[in-house]
Amino acid sequence: MEKVKVEICCGTACYLLGAANMMDLEDQLPAEWRGRVEVEARTCLELCEKENLGGAPYVRINDTEIMAQATPEKLTARIGELLTEAE
Amino acid sequence: MLNGSTFIRRELMIRIVRAFDDGTLEKELDQIPIKLRPKNSVASGCCVYHDRAIFKYRLMALLGVSVEDETDEAKSLAAYFAEKAWGGGANDTRPKTPLSVCGPACSGCPDAKVVSTPNCRGCIARPCVYNCPKKAISIVGGQSVIDQSLCIKCGKCITACPYHAIVKTSVPCEDACPVGAIRKNDQGVAEIDFEKCIFCGKCFAVCPFAAVMERSQLVDVLAAMKRGEKLVAMIAPAAEKQFPGKIEQLLSACAKAGFADVMEVALGAEKTTEHETAEFIERMEKDQKTFMTTSCCPAWVNLVGKHMPDLVNHVSLTPSPMVYAHEIAKKKDPSAKTVFIGPCVAKRSEARRKDVDYVLSFEELGAILAGRKIDVIACEPWPVERPANPTARNYARSCGVTDAVLAEATAKIPGFKLDAKQINGIDRKTCAMVKLYAAGKLPVNFLEVMACPGGCQNGPCSLT
Image 1 (cartoon, rainbow over the protein chains, first blue to last red):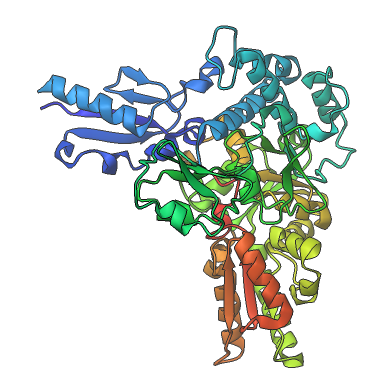
Image 2 (cartoon, chains in turn brown, yellow; image 1 turned 45 degrees about the horizontal axis):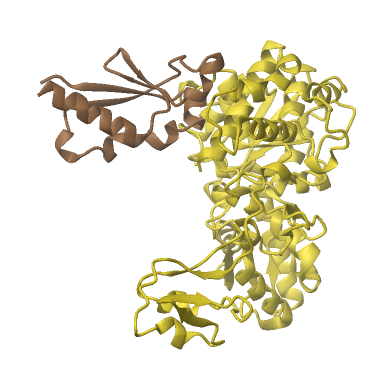
């Protein structure tokens, strides 16, 4: 089965604007998802330029999808959707 | 801690740094409120125009200008900035009063009272009525009603009600202030009495409308860097776990951001430990029955100075880690200017007293790093001559100073005994306790006081 890849931007801007709350995302996910989700902390993904700063913290899912103003709750819900789709 | 109000403050800070570096800040400043709240966007308050007015005051505070000192409402942010940035650093930029209240942001919270809510079931046991010592509660139409002219807000009815139907409303800033320095004025807007204020920053940390603001030196530091001043970043021990990565990596990040030199304040804490221990031993030799209290928490020193004259002689005369760190930096390079970087509001008042040139919060440092695209985890560790002593790095935790002094004293005098007590967070209750100590009721000889519960690591400007 394919894994869901989650890249959390840990550039200082995203870190200050909320990514700090997602550092332990892996531990917050339901136990049955273990092994199916790959969480990585990334240095600045360069998504917070200019007027997009208010969208921080940014998370990239499966290389293409960008989530703005990410929170552990929003992320968990989206990962759940992707896992269900994959089944 | 991140919430809606810290988010907006941090966003504004990062915008300031980016625009400053682009050389467009003067032009952009007055546009930021409009860019953040264009017409038809969702407002945080009553409307976008009110939000914009508040943003202007937030930006003023970030420029270091106090709302209380505003004389011309029409003066633009660009004009305030021009005074700062092009003043050549001739003026003393350290704020006399590090806090400022943004009147338009203050919600004028209703006075604290105990009220009954619709959760009341109108039960027949009526524990609220029976427990009220002032007979202030009656049942009207099957609902408890509290007569406010009789209520003394003791809260007995709150605990007695099994339905949680009775609540106490609060004014968060007034509740948090340990010395009664913040009160609503006759217009119903919070006002700080700076004669009483100890700058502990508790009102700043709790206000849900972020109406209490810090007067920042952020732009002063940016301008000083641009002028080519040699700035030394002095990182407080509380920095541990503030940013991802190690302290040494944070030091590298600061160097990359434009500080000429970087150091840990913990190196100053080592000196504080050494001198404070010697001072303690000397005091005990003179008088075994007396006690000494710590001097590294500036809010505590302010509290004693302004409210507890009986305790003044008990406060250690040893300088704080920040002051020693400043001395070390100045010795290394007398032309350098020092920047203390920590989680503390009150340090801004100490810096002014002790000639430290600038103070930044971890948030402000974070904004500089974010603005300049520096990720702490991507930085190589800074080649420190030697890491600071673990007991010195531990100063930011409650009991940390006690442990350091005890370790130092035991090393000098084997079997040395320290009867220590810690005040872990200043609030009204601990203030009352300390007043008893001042009256001679302290059963110990060493009193460590930290204004923030858990120590500096939980300071009002802490990131996490």
